[in-house]
Length: 415
Image (tube, rainbow, N blue to C red; front, side):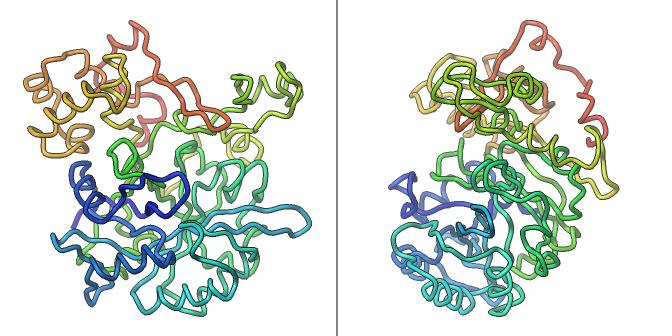
């Protein structure tokens, strides 16, 4: 069974999320995107937990089903902020095998603090202790460091993270089987750290719109859809086939910079200017590319033996909006998007599967077809994001004329 899974989302009870997030909208737009399995998001929040239990039915395999038979699994994100000689702040995806275990996790969290004020609550628990405590509840609980490279809340973040898995988890390192790449990093960057963990990718979506939901996802090939089979794939890599990533330059923290001054730069430039913003003379936010260079044990281009294929693609809405110079949520963008989806069934079909000949036959705007193909081949140039600002697509006349079978240097070894 081939499953495209997005196992890191949020409910409407988390900060900075759409107030229209509900089971019905998540299911509807996951299908349009081409996602076939979702995490529930925020399962410890009392209002969302009540809604999940009312609207979803759990089968013997730990899968939650909507009334229209769309599958979910129990999932939340927890923020740990604590001191161990210096301030640490790390976010974790938590996956749970069933309702009983989820209820026990909620009981544990309530003993440590409140769970009702935000869908992603904060606790002052050290990471090593947190993993140990959850594993005592049920060994099938999966704890995955979320968006592992982001400066403030990533496991390896430049501001409050750690330099290694063992530094963060100590004796519990053996219970960390995977890390989430996050939008500002990609597997080939993380391979250089040589941490010997699998890499998964999920959206951390704060809405159900298809330019957020499933913008990053993981493709599994397993037998029966069950929680145990998914966790086996995450832990062993068997059945964990591919990941769908946004180009890391598109992420909000890829380059160094200072958003307030609209300044960004490469790691080499940061070194030249002493890490200070030349506009205001304050410390720059150090991005993921720079942090990778600091932690890397291998040179750029290193490929481990167990390397898995990955795609670097932007959502279809982004391509349409760029082509026509309109906003991503504009009426024109939606009109073209809907026409394409009506024919090709879902967005991942368009982005990854449909042949160039089919696209050219059905899509009137040939420049849009070019963009889709450039996107598929990883040839879109993106001005790197920085300090909380998304990257931006840029295209030269030269790149537009290079839609061919040629792959980039990185992709040659992966596709």
